[in-house]
Length: 228
Image (cartoon, rainbow, N blue to C red; front, side, top):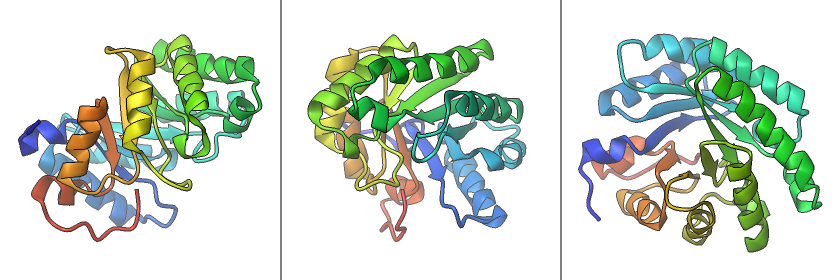
């Protein structure tokens, strides 16, 4: 598979989730996204009002992460954060599941968490992605989390926060795609730093990529970042 710069850009959620990111850093992220016409800019919810303002007049969507990066917040807290972010301008929400409850076999709790977010986000006609943090799961747990994401009526299942032990892996993306079927969204996030890696993820089944190395990927330059 070969994609033009313009085609590949529309797969990319240009991401800046660093705790130390300043307003100037976030503004630069928005400027880069607008220049290359990426699918979105993905930030912590605090920055959504600023990002929404920066992206006015573009086709780039503001995305907020919710329950990030651990997922071990109450469902009510996640719903509140999602609603607040949407009201501030977010067009998509990337939530983190309760990873510990998934690993503990409490699937009803995990499903209820996803369903509550799905209901809130879809009530406002926005998209929901579900981060399952594949680095902390075995293959069976990845399959289970992917199934629960579909059952919870989200729009995407997403590999990683980018803040755990590792990011997206090709094998995990393939498992997720096989589990959710051909039409459900799959987002590969974390560890994608080159054009070649981006194409591999897409060929494995990803329909969206969460990356901070967007400029390097799209221009073929060397990625010098240490993040997402």
